[in-house]
Length: 162
Image (cartoon, rainbow, N blue to C red; front, top):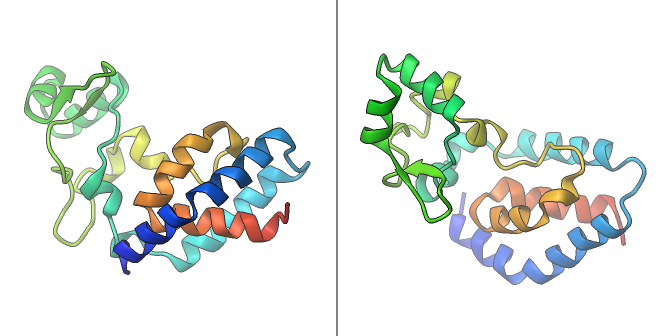
């Protein structure tokens, strides 16, 4: 998987993608959620996240209190110790990883805490959510990081000719 090529294409098409997604926001098709689900399933049949893991290498998820408690319990740590060892508070006052790539990313691109991973990781790249137009800015950012997000927007554009 050529991540640089995907990134280059995503940056070149950002304007076109933004215009398309804004059009969805202004006038969403009645069956948008079904179209989104079909596009999501199609993309993830073709793209294997384990062949990429760019999200885990370049962007850290936001950790909620529930995430911290669940993961700390799994690691048999106190939540405060988990935070001290792995997290920092960013400029938006969110709890995020101290360092990238993610500490829990294994050499084979699997996740050592997959079953208890943060909510943000479970939902990424957010291509299967209802009312997809509510996260247009996030989707544009994700197309530069995630080949599946890029292919998802491309698929949506093909499916909904506007």
